Length: 76
Length: 257
Ligand SMILES: Cc1ncc(C[n+]2csc(CCOP(=O)(O)OP(=O)(O)O)c2C)c(N)n1
Ligand code: SF4
Ligand code: SF4
Ligand code: SF4
Image (cartoon, rainbow over the protein chains, first blue to last red):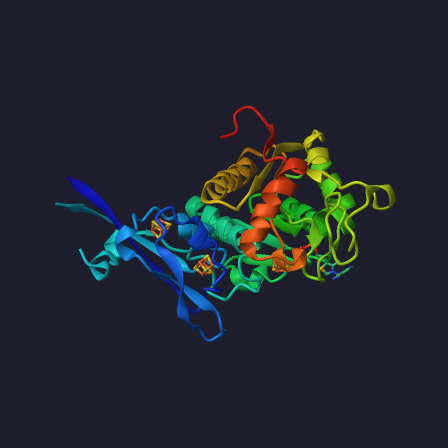
């Protein structure tokens, strides 16, 4: 059966650590990391990467346009 | 499959619009302005009209649109964006002209310009971000502040007996014959963001039909002014702003998509 896998890339320098994406990811993939960017914000990261479906919810709600999303169908 | 294999150009399904310059947005972390600013460029990019669109930025937190957008932007005096848009659209009728304004700009100092431009049916798109406060200057009470809402100039909450009632300017605009499309949306959830994007698309497409003014209100939080976190303010907005500013279309003319 084909499975959908996704992944996000967060532009760490654009991210302001607002957590809006964290709260709006239906798969609870995202968390703020433990390191800060040059402006002092804890930026978002994929904490549970294998759960991402590439639904783009996080990216379309990110106020700073910090997220790009990739999606692929995996046959297994 | 490894994450690194998924992150490949051919699997890309979303990236921020190329019409954004890349300059960091000046908004506070989590501010809905950023989402609306982004969506406008996504719509312009999808319609492929970037060389034919001119934006008017207001006075307010979104004053710096010209730094963020790879399109032409004129910055208007406080409240005068729809007047500037009127002149521009009349001189260059084939261009897509939009204003982007906050509630202090559009519904306080610019009330007259707003109502008359919409009443004349200027063939423009008005994007109105209503956060119920003057964000840029420190969260003061605006005409749009809802009853009981605490601001820096109504610290005990807006008392309608002495401070008057909130202005639902979008409802007034909907009653004007010059307005062809009037809607109220939000950007606090992915579903709401998708609806706002569709509304913005309709509002730009209408300029091709030359039907009059299209007006899109987006109810937003100003968590810095409201003194909450971004997530708290989104919840507060759902519970307190939406009952006063219900989401949905206020006016749609036949034949609009
Ligand atoms: C003629 C004039 N009067 C007052 C001001 C001060 N001022 C700057 S921004 C602003 C209000 C902005 O509020 P709003 O339009 O709601 O935008 P927001 O910052 O909330 O996005 C005011 C009153 C000004 N710049 N010019
Ligand atoms: S929504 Fe955007 S800016 Fe906010 S934490 Fe997520 S990636 Fe960062
Ligand atoms: S694309 Fe969807 S599943 Fe993946 S991190 Fe973003 S919101 Fe979560
Ligand atoms: S002051 Fe309010 S409206 Fe302005 S950027 Fe900050 S949160 Fe947004």
